[in-house]
Length: 158
Image (cartoon, rainbow, N blue to C red; front, top):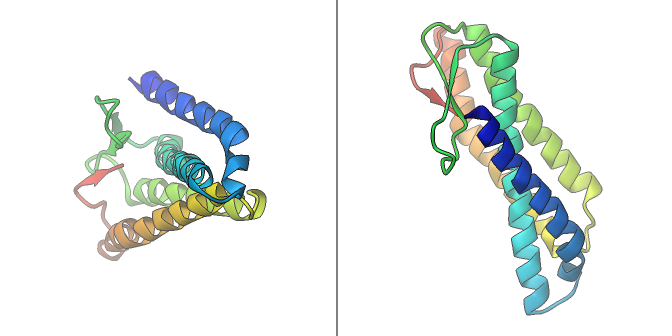
């Protein structure tokens, strides 16, 4: 099933790259076309940042030899579940922090490399900042709880 998730996400990234190349310059203008292309391409870039965040969690878990179960539904936003039983606190911490590495890389990429004049860039930047907010609001408390209790939280789906 993992290869199917990888294929799905690689196709999303490839489609986003193609649409960026084709449509993003139109978002530099004004009017309906600029707004529409900016939203579509910007949201797709945000989706790619989210996928990178999730894959980074997974790769961090696998790199630490963690026990994980891969999702069954390609329509789900959740790639895998981190098994709380059988994994150490260190494995949980590395898995958790790995997602933030990808998010930080996406923030840097979106702000340093995307053209300021494209509305698509601004939508993508807003999306990746929202992703960062969600990470801080949802994942930092879970990580903090694990560190404070020195144990892996019981329910960790990524």
